[in-house]
Image (cartoon, rainbow, N blue to C red; front, top):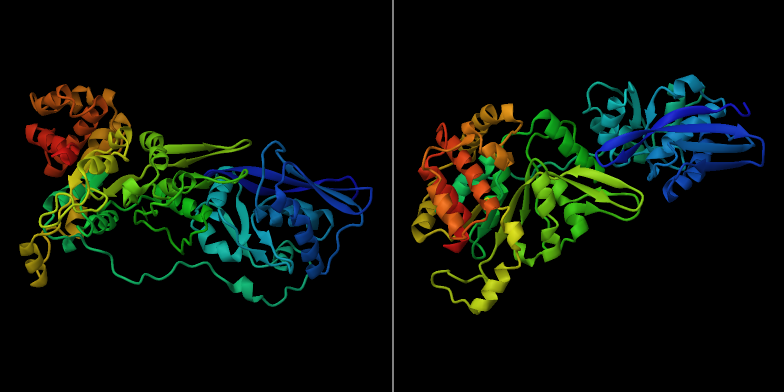
Length: 518
C-alpha cells in the first residue's frame, strides 16, 4: 500500500555490544527505484541488487514504484552485509508477500545470495546476545550460524537457509527449492590433532615452573628470558592448561570475540582459556585492534581475554606496538576510536613475554660463545620499555635443562608437577583469593589497587615488607613495582595456604620481580 510504512529489525554491532536497528520500508509514487538511507556503507548500498535478484529467485518482483528503506537511528553508521535479510523481509512485507505484523517481531541477521540463499556473517553470537538484552524474543539467523546462535539462552533462534524458507515460515505460499550446496556448508571447528600438553613434560626448570604457577594463581604478567631452545615456548603453551576453566560469562565473551573475527566456535561453549601468540611482525592494529572505515575489529589482546597473550621474541616487536599494550593492560579494556565510530573490547589477558638474552641468544649460556658486545646486549633488551616491564609482575631466567634432567627424561621419569596437580593448586589459590577479595570488588590478586592494599585486612605480617622497603630505597623497584610485588606476595601466600604474606613470601615475590637483574 502506497505511503504505509512497515518495519522489522536488524542489529548493528558496536564492539561486543549491539544497537537494534529499525528497518523501515515504504512505497511511494515515483519511478521504480530502491533507495537506502540512514548512513549505510557500500555493502549495505549494494544490498538492493542482491535483494532484487533474490526476489527474482523467489518468483516475486518488487512493486513498480519508488521504495525507500530507512535504517534508524539514522545517525549511527551501519556496515556489513548482515542487514540484507532484514531489508529483504521489510520488502517482502511492504510487497504484501508476508504479514507486516509478523515481520516486526523478530531481529533478522544474514547476508543474501543472488539465488535467495541466506549466507553466514560474522558476529552472530554477540548480535544474538544484544538482541536478547534489548528485549527481543526471536532472532532469525543463517542456518550455517545456528549452532553459534543457540549458545545464547533466553531467546528463540530461527535458522533459515534461504529467503524462500523464511517467507514460507512467515506464511507465504511459496515452494521451497531443494537446498543448494552452499546452504549445507556448516562452520565447524577443526578436530584436535594432539592431546593437551602436560606441565610434567617440563624438566629441570623449577624456577620457571614456580613462576608459571604464581602467574596462573594470581593472573600476574610474566617475562621469561633465556637462550633459544631453553623451553620458553613450551612453558607458555602449558599455561592455559593450569588456568581455571572459564565461567559461563567469560566463555560467552571469548566466543563472541571469536565470532566477530570469523573464528569457528563449535556446538558448545569452550571453557578452556584461549591462547594467542601473534608473530613479532604483527602490526599495532593486529595486536590491539582497529581497522579501516567504521568497522573496528578486536586485536590479539582482546582475543586473548581471560586467557594468555604470548609474545615470543618480544624485543623483535616494534616498540610502538608493545607500548600500545600498556594502557589496556592497566585498565582491562581498550576503546578504539575512528572518525565516526568507536568500539570497546575487553583486554584482560595474562601477558607472557619471552626474549633471548641477546641478539645471538648465547649470552650467559654455559659452553656457548656470545658474539654480542655488552652495549649490543643492553640495547637489545632495552627494546622492552621500562613502563611496559614495570607492569610485569614476574621475571624469570629460563636455563636449558641440565644433563642429569635430560637423562631422567630419557629414562622415562616425569616432572614433579603435572598439569592436573598444578591446576588443582591454582584453583585452590584462586578460591582463597576470591573469598578474601570479593567483598572488596576484586576477583584475583593482580586486580588489587594500592588503596586496598593499605587496608588492615590486606596488610602482610608485621615486618614482612622490609625487603620491599629496602628495594624501593635503592631504586630497584618503583612505587608501581612495590604495589605489584605486594600483590604477588599475596598470591604466593594463597598457594601456601597462609592467612597473609610473611617475610619469605615477600622475598620470593621481590626475587621474581628483579630476577632479570640477577
